[in-house]
Length: 248
Image (cartoon, rainbow, N blue to C red; front, top):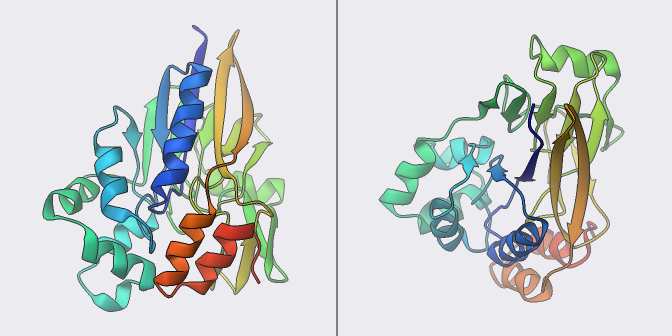
């Protein structure tokens, strides 16, 4: 089996400056391919410009839960971030995201998913406890994987960069979030995610001599103007996460 190097991005959330910095860093590493695991546009930043950028890339793209919510014809199914993104997107951009799916078999030994292989709103690697996330127990992780037997599974959704092994020895990698280093959520119970840094996150996974390895990368970018943009658009929650990686 040939050696192969794959860059993994996820949860861009319309943060084009962070994405451009990550792409420049990816080029420095000389990867064979790039995959995007979804939640690409939702948020108060640059949804339309980010869509144009992504549509021009020769990448495999997934839909996240926010792509599904942006497309929801009932406004009640969209939060503030989804509503803003939808208001900015053209019909061609909406048609593009409508053609994306939440999981895909990228190669015989590589499965891509936004959340778990079967659900875009469930964390794969994390579980929620006492208002925070922690690594899921091995049995729960195996349950969420179901009958997936790919040696490499890459997932997003939680914005938390992690690399773990399943009970079957599969490498499971979450690259973290390119665009937002934390968030508040109400499902499955109220909790907060904080990465403690405003850096943009992504991962590189590499198959060498038939075995998968992973590297989780944090890349600084000019985040302060992006945080100020979120504040000008009335999103103090995003402002704090983008500025510091913490919730104030």
